[in-house]
Image 1 (cartoon, rainbow, N blue to C red):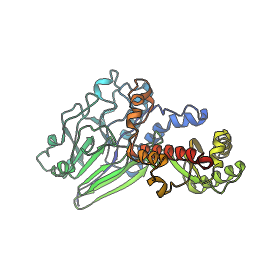
Image 2: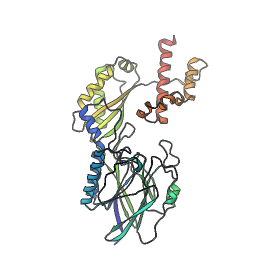
Image 3: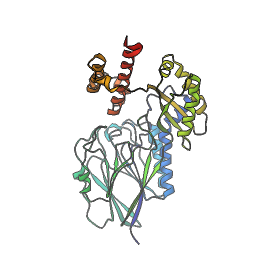
Image 4: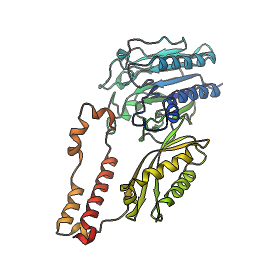
Length: 411
């Protein structure tokens, strides 16, 4: 009979995340949001039990910070105890958020849990039917950052072990969207001759390479407006001849972005029906969702309604309806945007407006925001600005300024 093992690959649980910026949402919804990482953990355990896996891999950042709450530690221990009752092992490493030296009151976990104890790459051997079946390699962060390359420390052990699996909480050298910890090149990993690379740290799900599989499962529960869509883990089956990977959603609720064109709405009361219909159409057959809504129109009335604070009332009316559905939805953030194109001839003109347009295209806004993003208090509550964010802000500012300059014929 051919050798075969199955396991769950998860990472970035971020238990007890604070979910900043949502204090304004209804209290009963906020409680569900605050508990969502724990609900996702419960679903992770149930998935492992249902699939009757051999073991579970958790690749770093089990907790959101190094000073873990007692609630988070106890809930995780209970999850591991449930896996123990089903003879399922757990192999885990700590990452940059829950580094070992930051937690002075660690909880003892049951004996089915194997923790990589320090920053030196080591291995555990999983036995199946009393025979070595898989060597699992990894390390834990002792302090907040691991800046050196670790891949050279991953060396296959000798002996007859059918499968070799690497656990690595880190990022590609080329990654520009996140802090680069334990950096690696894909070629470094493929040289190790492992059967599977279980990655963590990046919250966006991605298969970097299929042979051998080099995989980010993403986090198990979205925690802010940039972590949209389904979140979960991979169920992996390794055999001597094949590898199958199945993504399994675990999220308790989703963050999603929705754009609605309301150009055909001539009266404010029409917006409620338009927005509600779009939400029902785009989110049907889905679970609870927190929505960030972008309303677009080629008419001036949308901006006027927003200036007169009518939009707050419209959004409140929509929320009153969609919040009480079985799979509730809630608009926690909205923006309005005027749809109009800037004439190419105008942009190329030898006049003040043309200069303004060209200046927008050439200048970066980063220098203007540097002081804000470096402010000791403010930066705690701000997400890192992406290139997409900068482009959106520049476009909106450019359109608003040109619109004001040309209003009333440019007088």
